[in-house]
Length: 118
Length: 107
Image (tube, rainbow over all chains, first blue to last red; front, top):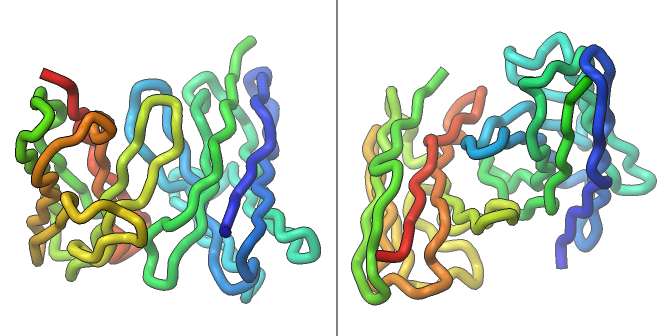
């Protein structure tokens, strides 16, 4: 079955960057975009951007446009999200999710806690 | 951006109760709406897509309806494992946006 396994928790200093990985299995990696989302403590879900492996392109939320890099390595079926210029407000659980054909998210990673603290 | 307004933000209910959660979009989204369940400390899980289509393996006590800007998630008979938070998501247009969530608690 389809599985998305994310990298482990991170603690980062303000101003630094973090790179989270999302290893997929059980499906055709290039056939489905991967979404990145986050959830701050006690808050709701926020969409950050998508990587469309088939075209090697990404779609990003304007809020993160200047700070986020979304990539993938098709040879290992792994997607990556790098967020730079971290600040305390970026402390959150970051999720990757597979995008079904029309835009809903049918499989999710387990989440990666990123803590930004001096 | 399309704003998704979910109500109520929380509710208390008993096992066996019928529960309804609503989601209103700030503009029409042509049934491009999904519902997710999230248990504490876990990733969200897809329940329904296209407003009313049940994802594979989701119990039939969950149902969705609506059109245009107004959508509803109904749990016909609440079970102990249904106590969780629920989120709606529009995927009609970018940026994809979510409702603020509804926490279903045990009465």
